[in-house]
Length: 210
Image (tube, rainbow, N blue to C red):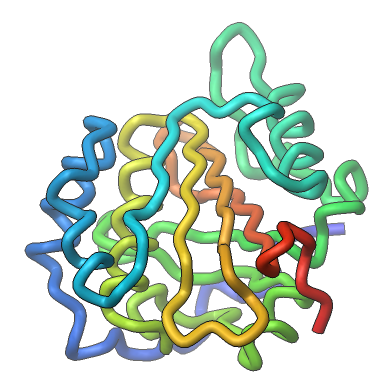
């Protein structure tokens, strides 16, 4: 079984014209540094709490089992400190997390990422499937999309697991989006793909089932 669901020649949608790439670059730097002081205001002005950013989380830091399953699996692939190659990933080994898994592939010389896989449970909850599309084409609010891109770029740059959490605007059922990003390398040992677990949670901390 393979995660390569989007062929390398797939047509990619054009990124949103509302995306602020300078802000993404700045936010990436701040997330790499573990400092969200400059990021928080973009959320606060929307009436939302600042996002959570935590590098190298442990299982105790993760709120739900699918994310813990994914972290445990990824950790088994780290050998002598070397990050896992993307071809080592076998989805059969983390079935409990599958519907909540996203695979992102670096494009445009590492400027952003394309969705190779968009988990079926995430798609049902969101009401759309982003497989084969750019992160910048995501229909979420610009600040949320920019934060997601910056977080992914930061994960690739540091080459370490990154846990983030944000509250969506205008949420009816989903009150929190915990997200675990795990770096994967290519044949040159560069981080070019990110294995992501993302779980929509209700106000009681339970996974939203669409």
